[in-house]
Amino acid sequence: MAKARKDNKGRALRKGESQRSQDNRYIYTYTDPLGKRGYVYATTLQELREKEAKLIRDQLDGLDLYVAGKADLDFVVDRYMATKNNLATSTYANYRYTYDHFCKDGFGKRKVAEIKYSDVLHFYLGLIEKGIKVKTVESLHCVLHPAFDLAVRDEIIRKNPSDGVISEIKKRQGRKQKVQRALTVEQQTELLNYVTDHPLYDIWRPLFTVLLGTGCRIGEICGLRWQDVDMENRIIDINHSMTYFRRGKQAPYTFEFKFEPPKTKAGIRKIPMLDDVYAVLKEMYDYQKENGVSPLVVDGATGFIFINKLGNLYKHNAIDHSIRRIVNTHNAEEEVKAKKEHREPIMLPFFSCHTFRHTFCTRFCENETNVKVIQAVMGHADINTTMDIYAEVTETKKREAMENLSKNMKIF
Image 1 (cartoon, rainbow, N blue to C red):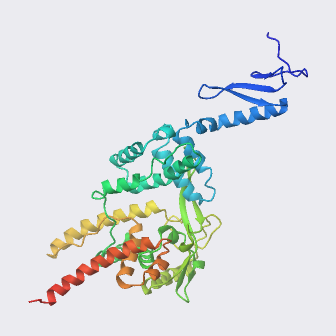
Image 2 (image 1 turned 180 degrees about the horizontal axis):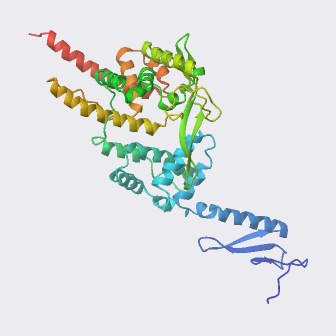
Image 3 (image 1 turned 120 degrees about the vertical axis):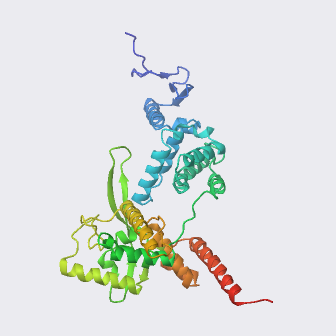
């Protein structure tokens, strides 16, 4: 067995440690993850070992690779996500899920210093070619872009390779993307009449009415409680949202509801009730007063208004699936009915529960010119979001006005 080396005080030195005879300084020699030899110096053995411990921690968490620009994208994203302690739990979980599902262990294994603009562009286009929606790619971009920014600020890379990629994607996909459309007044009326008269789908009438009559986000309505509703003054107080998200980084995952405040201050608002909204809430209030309010407790909250037939809160995807069934059934029945009555059928488009919010905003823009009022009721943090819908609506109304003018006005 080799004899253990010792310092000038007789203390045993570990592997890689040594002491110089000329000035008694301590040295630790090591090989970094890239195969390069490195040295750590100290005036005392205790100081040297503290530096050794820090070096080992840095190597374990990949810091050496990061500083050398050899870390992969997975590491950079993990480092970025570790700084996002101000995110809502559900937002963090969604970011984590999106990255893990579409990027981790694939593109995420690329060395961050070697990733170019064209690499990110081809990666995004590849996802779209596989059938991934542009909106989902945008969600992934919300993780990658700031992660690259962090690496730029840390001087690991010079430029953010994802700058401008989403703009290019939208430009290329512009003609292919389906523009989100609100339901027309005719479609809106047809939908509510259909579910109201249907023996199976009539349970959806209250929820659809409130969604169409308030423009609230689906999470705001799914988490609406009786204590948030002032029936006397006909005001709905939107002060929270109920989100349903995945917990955990690896399978098997667990899913749970989370009672959270709106993502922005603009989301906290009071919405006056339309007559139809008041009527359906009054109907539900009287029924639950007589039969009992749901005892369901979710994340400490109680008094929920909208409960499914199993006694639980509605999940967004379950609502979307039901909408698809309703539209399928309606359109099949309407084609037969319209043929018997010798008229054109009123067909319903396939849509998601978010379309109710878009439809309300469209109806509001058609009848209100004060954009700030629309923004306040909708809870838009950015006025541009309101203006996009308003501009679309006013452009349509302008065409309609000119068509009517053309029928009634003769120039010569």
